Image 1 (cartoon, rainbow, N blue to C red):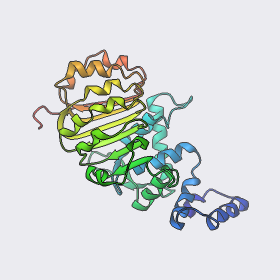
Image 2: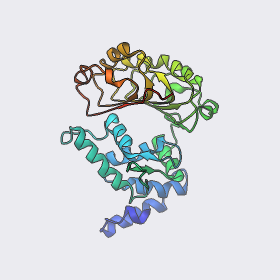
Image 3: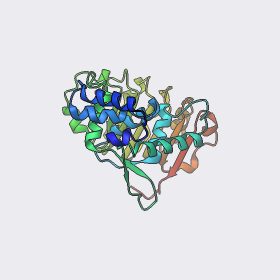
Image 4: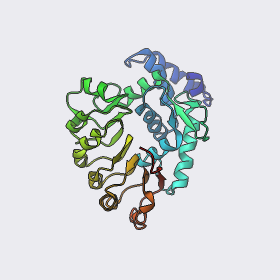
Length: 295
């Protein structure tokens, strides 16, 4: 990893400086010190933020590249004066993926049968990334990542109002409705029970929320409270039903800052033609219609 990070460095002085950083480190552990060295060698803050984002998934989780880049766009990592179009941002995201691989901060996964690219993060790298994201361990309540909701409910987290990012990839429990949403900016949930969607009723109070991903394993209606999230820039709703279609379309039209919109649901053919033009900031839009016979 150190060799990969220093491969393009030619100056003897730069090598001496880096060697001193490694040998005099007072970080939490020697292992994290060496791993963070590779992170520190990334060319700019954008690559660093994109790298840390991979830690929001469980260890060795195969992350679909296109979905990951969509989230980077929603978080504002890829936007600047030179790259305003969705195509430019996606191309930039793809180049970042290729930069992270030689640094050992992400690993390539073999393409699936649909030729979709994926990456994953080694469990040790993931631990290091979360340590950095939590201000090198000084603010452990800043990011909450759990594989399942039960583990989260048992975690020693006394004040969820401190949390800025929550990621749960399966088994979200109804305890979610007790969360204080004050500082939350990113929420990624994959849930098994329809009850969970009703537990999200107080999500309307997450006024700072920028990124919201809800993945239902069973078809559920879209919570209309989403329409009150005025700062939302990324919205992904997977496996939903549009039984409340007229209401939800009106609510979605309120998301004026939305840059990425992913919707996987039934009856998408009835989407009002005026919805997308009203979302004037949208750079990426993916609409997938689910077979009506699916349960």
